[in-house]
Length: 71
Image 1 (cartoon, one colour):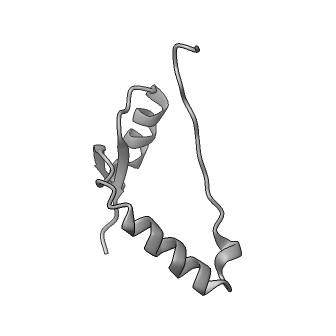
Image 2 (cartoon, helix red, strand yellow; image 1 turned 90 degrees about the vertical axis):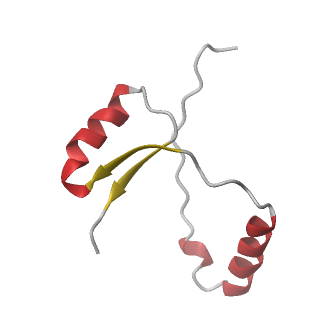
């Protein structure tokens, strides 16, 4: 086993744009799992984006890094 497990995941869901029934079915199945909310490890205001990026680059984050955008 490797001592560290790091990954970057991305999902392109644009192919679901015209498949609304599949999207609704998938969302209902996901909600039925009743998963706990994700752990938020760090929160930054939008103006703190450079600091948030540095935190991500440090490799010391646990949980989500959230950027707050004023509406």
